[in-house]
Length: 123
Image 1 (cartoon, rainbow, N blue to C red):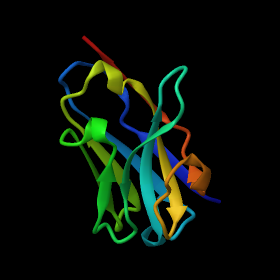
Image 2 (tube, rainbow, N blue to C red):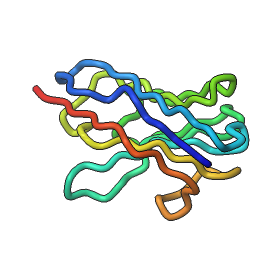
Image 3 (cartoon, rainbow, N blue to C red):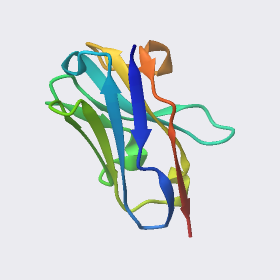
């Protein structure tokens, strides 16, 4: 059984930092592209960041470049998202996603989803 379990969300103020974690089980972690998506109320789910199976390449949506860092620890089967300089527009439910072999261009290509962790940023 595949499980992706996110943690680390919370309510913070503008400019603060949070680190999200996603513990994966039931998959060969090193074979999957891991991603963070987010969805705010009334909006579509959007991709925030990808990290390739090897960990050698990462990609970010423009709005988080320079502020967010995605990383993975294959020994712990865990994905991370370090979020700095948080803004109110970063408020959303954040989802961990696993896609076999290749990084997804969108939500349709994801193989597995976590349940999400809420991030709320207020001024």
